[in-house]
Image (cartoon, rainbow, N blue to C red; front, side, top):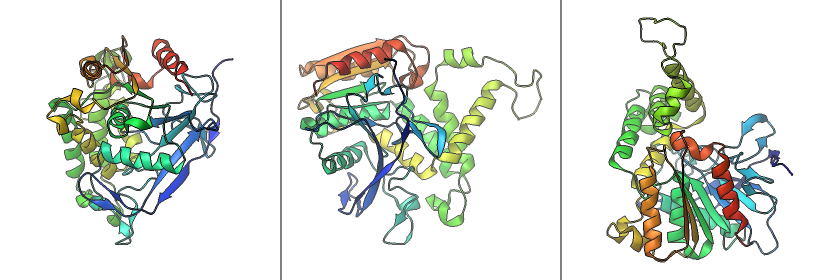
Length: 374
């Protein structure tokens, strides 16, 4: 049977009235998480897979929403009946993380202590905080151990952190297009993006909601900076080259080249759907991710107590999180004699390759999960 679609899905909300203490020392007294589920949880609750989202995504992993049939889940090509993550077999969960802007408690939510949006007062969260909140969420669903925790990019970093912070609560970790920490260059890209936002006159120290404005100009620039890093030079050249939009030069500072038009389109779309305060916090969360830091910079020591089996995947053209960074993770796992499978896929599309259709990549994930006992 050919792989099918999840079909129409509906988000749900889980409310937490008990406080959560963050790594920074800040505390959020109450919060909610928005999530979606696909497939059926089996009787012993052993077939659950947690999909962790990357920076620009959220809980809507697969399927479509009834009010917008064009809003397809960000990993719909991976998750569904008969697909690599087969919802005929697994109960798949996507959660919009704490600090997000797609329904979960975040900077645009009302701070119950002030009656106003949190805005710039919302604390900076970390991957460790996300794992803590996700573990609470899983317990609420009665899931004591995941068959797998998986994700790409920042989602993969969460899977890695799960194996460290909650080793007994997952049997497999799928770490795709990731790094054990950000390089100086990656931190620099994030800082440039954040500066574009915080320098926007409409930013108002993060309290722009109260002024009825959005730091749109800064958010657009931030998206452009980020999007450039997600694509490879070859992909940009193949798709756009030096093609002119109107076949002639305009001799001004508008759009001459198709790549400029594409970046502006992506920037406008992003600024319409993503919150600037959330973008600031998630890029800072990425900068802070470094599980080896607490172990003197030794990633092998950080992963010593992991009990999961691992699939680590990288893409040859991913210059943001290169295969060398994935190999650092693999080496640390091998140092501890953990079960790990590694694949480096020759693929031209850069960091975004983890989101795209590649038969070899999808078959690799499919084959790995077919061996996962439930």
